[in-house]
Each structure stands twice: as structure tokens, then as C-alpha cells.
Image (cartoon, rainbow, N blue to C red; front, side, top):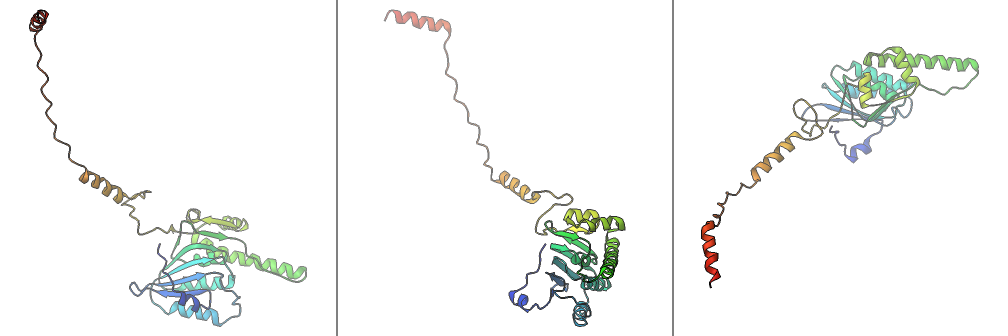
Length: 253
């Protein structure tokens, strides 16, 4: 599961929560979403969303999106989700750390969603800060209810789970490891190390090739068995009669 390494120079140039890289050989572009989604809300922000969309649409190839984010601005997540869904080529989402809250919504836009074996996804109810009287509090509650329904829309499209089940998972602030995310439909598969030889059909915990080679090496280097040596002839005995005659002769010596 190779993740293209970025040079320190590129990391220093990063001025927002996303960064692009490209592979000249394959032509595939890679988008990195690291950290909080929109450090500051881009509500009524015309520049940031336009900048993101322009960079997204500047290429004409499949893209890979690496996500490691605790979440952030739900408005930004909603727009990024819509932009990725509208992108006319395949979008492969790869989660190497955590895709929590708003970041999990963005992940739902992937044509394919893959998670590292150690990665996590977390979904929960939206939250906000409200100030005012009871009427203002009721408006805030109603607003959060609608935001939750909008988020459920994205989860429902991806997973096929019922809205009631998704709502229950959000109520419980559910953390999912890779296997559970795949089981529930939030992810499509688990990232594998392409360097390993897994054989043809079944994945084993050992390398079939390494074991086979080791066996061949033992067979080749094993010394040939030594030629069987002829046992020396057993000592020739004498008959009982002859032995008795010799004993009788010794008596008179």
C-alpha cells in the first residue's frame, strides 16, 4: 500500500488542508486530505471552494484520495463530497489513519473505498454551538436534525443500510475498524501490500514461494548418501569336533 512520499519542501508550501501530487508515469493524480477539513469554516467563502474545485477539475484522469482526518466543517465536507461525486473519472479513496465525522462523509464519494488494516472510520451525530433563548435552541436542534438527515443520505447511498440503522450508529458515535467498515458497506476492501506474494487463490500468513525455494535448496544441497561399505567377512569358526581335539592336545603341553 504504497503512499507517495512528499518532500519537506512541498509540505512547507502547503497552505490549506489539501495537497495534490501526480505520477508522471501513470498520469494518476493523488489528493491528500490531512488534518482538519477546513481549519476555518468556508461558509460564505467563495475563494476556498472555488480553488478546490479548480484544482480537482484541472486534470483528466482517475484520482486517488488519501484521507487521514478527524473531521471538520460539515459544509466543506458536503461540497467536497459533491465535487468528487461529480468528477467524471474514478475516485479511489484510501484511508491510512482515520476518516472521522466530516471526513467519513467525503470518503463516501469514492468509486472504491479502501482502508489500511490499522485504519479507523468514525461516524457520529453533527454538533454545533448555539447561544440564545429557548426558541433559538429549538432552531439549533431542528437544524442539527436536518444536517443529520443530509449526512445519512450519503451513508445510505454508499452502504445500502437502512436509515434507522445508520441513525443508530451515529447516535452511538461508532468507530469501525477496516473489517467492520467493509462488513457494513462503508468501505469496499482492505489495502494490501503488493510486495507480498499471496499465491493464486488463498492468502496465507507465509510466502509460498519462499517455502518452496527453501525446500528446493535443501534438496539440491543435501549431500548424496555414502556408498554402502561392504562389511568385513565374519570370522570363520571351527567345528565342535576340531575344537575338542585342540583342547585335548593342550592338556599335554
